[in-house]
Length: 280
Image (cartoon, rainbow, N blue to C red):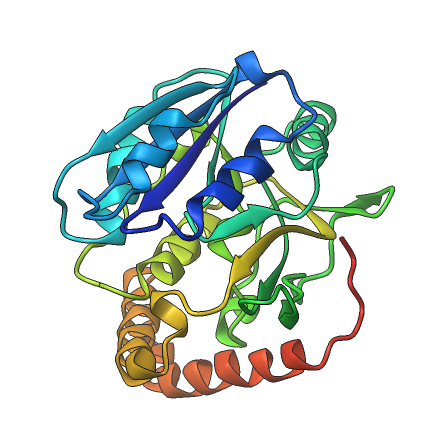
């Protein structure tokens, strides 16, 4: 299978080389990997670095002024969704794959189980590479079947969403033909649109999903959604997203409990700071 790896970037010359190395080190046919660098017209050396990276992968750079992260994602989706037999992943310029076998494992899961989406766990690290948070993203819903520690789901329940569950975007690998069914990121949300997109995408009634309890992606703490200065803004956006989700899905009676979902969503995060296992 082919991969389109979408990397949103802006003034990322301090981190994008690690992102590239983790991608270029994948033990997967490089001719089947296309790296789309979606740059917001960086003012540092980001583009110079990317242009000089030596790789057998197909590499495309788009550097132009945009209105933020989710505009870049939408551009990448529009460039990728019509590519047949292609898997798309969002690997930002401060993210890395956790090991060199990620794309191979993901490809095998897609081939073996014919799913639409594969997702995994996520870890956040500090500047020194120390693990600060381990996001175990296993749903509350009982799996439909399980093979070799791979959990398969045909759909998700409202209960999962009510208790604040969602898929972490950096770990989502999605087939292009299924991506065409999902609307673009809502750019009215400047920080939490990935939460909105993940909810809409995963609630599709025909979705087939595989979850693997491994860490496939490492994310550097300090991104837009992790900055203390943005905490209040992200909570406000989360609340609007939850209300909109319930109303759009005609669960209007639940919209009055949106605050409960928001509270539970944040409570779910607390254990992530105390998980000791490092399942890389």
